[in-house]
Length: 469
Image 1 (cartoon, rainbow, N blue to C red):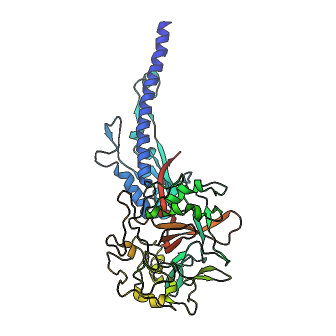
Image 2: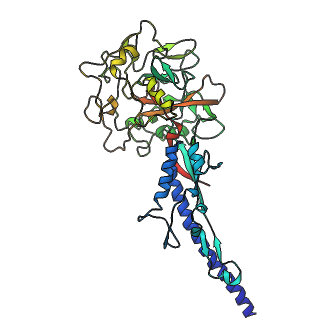
């Protein structure tokens, strides 16, 4: 009986020891897959260049260096292969190999690393005891990891797109969904079709079927300017009207380094101030304007079709004065339509440095009638180092630094806002695009002013890369 029992005991012992070898190898490969996937997914932006960068990033940890991937208890090194990675538009696939992904990279924001695509030797475990009792000399294991974005840098405040066209020739100037770069807008006073008041929307910041109206739930998303979803376009989002600016203005103002009080106040660690918190107030903070603007934004123009500004029509209404265009170009400059078209014709996105722009000598034709001018005593910045007032990092005329105790981040004053197809019936809305609006001054409980700075590609706004099961 003892002899028979020993045979069984030794068999289980052999199984346990060999399974521990396989389990350890599986853990080693899982670490490789997780790390490679997480690091590579940060590079994905829906372009072929993003996929190229992801491949390079994934391969870096397989090269010589102290952090190089190893296996077999750290004794053996590994070599990367593009066969180990695939790309998809969602965490559930369908998955595309590298060649196919490079050919059609649009919206490929997720990737999967499978160590089975690497050299088979990495997953092969030579058993110590099982070969004594069975005819299995080796066994094979592998690991897989899926990574991609779980949030998008968009503030859950929706406004109406003023026109259907994403890009339009406005008398030689680029116009995007009815907005012109460098022009200020009262974001609470826009509507389509025309109405007696502006309209805003809460865009549900999480992917669920019902709208969210609770300010305590919304506050963290407004503080950070993010939404807990990977994409907005390609379908509908849940909305509710109207955005509670009276309750959430202090969260918006975290970008100026003010955080308010109470349970819903922002945390400076997750909602840093901008690196330049200078307020470009129309009557004493826009010193580059030749005449004092009449308001913080372009003057309201309400018609039966749209509630927008005098900068909306191809020609401003007769009798428009220069002061009625508000402060111009505090953050962004107007762009010639030809500058956009030269890139669009090749299918290339807007370059990181932006399209080429107009200079202030064109104000007389861009903003006519009215023809605002730049100041003679404090002219508009024209050097390469300081292309706009916001770009200053010294002095007091155009710059003010945040508190030294605060963390700061460039361009935090830019709100990425969903531009919705209006009118909206019910709680479902279509996102036409994502507009960038620079907060020229802090929000109040009744106002929010933003200077239009162009459209943001959804792919470029990803944040918080995570692993998916």
